[in-house]
Length: 329
Image (cartoon, rainbow, N blue to C red; front, side, top):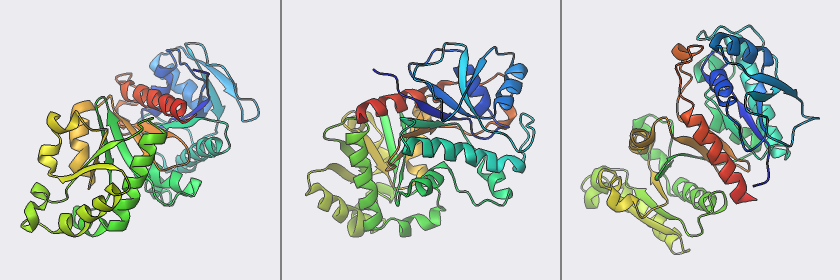
């Protein structure tokens, strides 16, 4: 596989993102990986962790074509607005976090990077700074001019995409319209083909209600919305199974014969996936014109600077981005 450049954003500077990047740099990577962050921040965190990593400065005008040696990390220096103390949030650095995401996302759009991998941000502190921010996914959708994106988490043997994401449970049923379900299903199907190399994806679709509505006795969303939409898409050749009761869909009988599960809401699908693969799962944003993967965990402020962290999820996020880029070539 020919080396391709990838952008890495460490996210919240007071969290474990910088630690993850430094620990990852102790291992050789098959592609040039460029951390877009403050060089001073990484140097300070490396000293705190006692990790010997050589920070190699790069710029947009001089990006490397070969991977960095083990024990070193390419850094596109992005200055902080305020000094960072590990574990202590500072809203003064909110704009810095968004600048790193903008540099990475725009770099992907401009062809400088084959994809971007993100460590966790802290949505609360960004909003406290006066910047409206609902998450990586929405930010990158806006940056790339994408009308609809889909959140999918994946681990070994299981992919789960979501029709709705961060909504109060009370609002979920109203949000599951035929139009939304069709858009999400089309994006999931297309990206499984073009970014994961699956020629004819088989997708299992959860019902919304217990027992998938039990013929209308436990809800009518399956009858009125979900089944007619799936039937229309099946007529185009998509392999869609469902709507199926979520409590039986997530069993080996069904999962061993599918490429992805489409869940109706966040906590219908993700608890199963995280139980199966927490620490070794990846968050993938589907529907974007760029490749973006992320870790499956938060900023872990209490562990920042402690060295008591696991790079497993970030490594999976990297490997997934590499595979997606190779498939899409």
